[in-house]
Image (cartoon, rainbow, N blue to C red; front, side):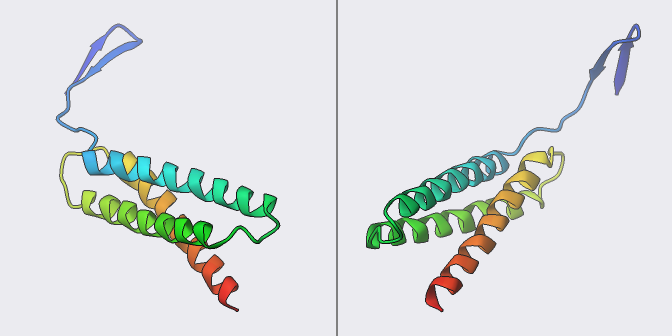
Length: 109
């Protein structure tokens, strides 16, 4: 239902809300991107020999991206939600999953 008050003001009555798992997916996606950027910068500063700790943190980042992607996909089944947070979370996490897989394949070769 849309109520007009003059030309500018409009009031929208809706039952839609942002799903909690979609918001978590978005936050996980942002955290994963920031941590991967930090890991890459630290590895570059160390000359590529940063040690096993960065590898473990990279794998944990990969696992977090998978969890964020699963959260975003589960939100698509819900009704009466705003889909912007799951879509952005899905995009952030899926691109990070692809980047991590490419990095690990290139590192193994």
